[in-house]
Image (tube, rainbow, N blue to C red; front, side, top):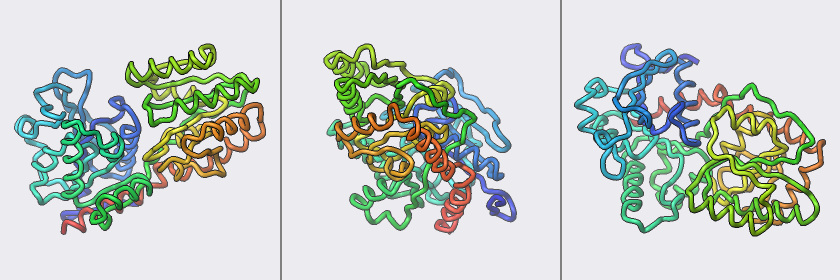
Length: 386
């Protein structure tokens, strides 16, 4: 597929605004943005990114790929103000080259909203990719600062020309809150890159959890399910890769101690993407026990390596993890989760079957399979504005 053409034959020019890209990545959003940008780059789309840099003291430009320009901004008060919002006047004054006639402004995060409005001027179409609805994810917290952020996100939903959601589950939430935005909404999944690492079947009963340590991620359920298996005589180890607040991690450790699992559950903190892939390749199975989930990226990444998956049927997670390619259980059902652990452990035949089916499923989400739909979405942004 050739890149879209506009303005007398020039290729499409995109300005992307994101908190996460490549090494400056903290979760699914960073994986998504990195994949989208490089996928479009291979199709000849010209892209400029603005992204904060945690380890930079001065701003700077960098060139990547074929047509990617990246403006890195230090994460400090000179560029970011109240509620973490970027100071549009400062950035535009210091970098006037970003004040041009873009074909599409692609926003991946709400803290760029002031800059989005300043650059758009109601003329340049805005595409907003929503990786989570903040009011839903944070439980509609009454905290004033969070309420302000909720309202910023919801205003952006109103003012943008196109909304990208990553699952039908998220679309259902939008329909319940803002049904008037559905006509400009499209569900487009996050893609993955199939890595070189491959799962290796072994005799070790070692399970893996990867992700942030948050209460809705279901880690407590997994620990309790592990305890049931220990009581039944199955000795299973659990490696937890990821970080959370000090208070919540302490809470999890207290549960582990109370269930006498100190020797079986191990915390490894945040690890690089390459280390995570090695963990996945060498684990008996990857468990994704979320109580709610907008998507299932960690599960997809595990399936792309061939790691057997056990997952809850929460929200968007259930859309990418079908029953045929994983062991699934009802959200929050510790007994069902425990039974799934029992089914997987010491069952090499089932492990192999899930490995092959999971990899086959993951291939459907490879970026190369999704690129036509992303290009069509960008084209629709132009059509909508014209």
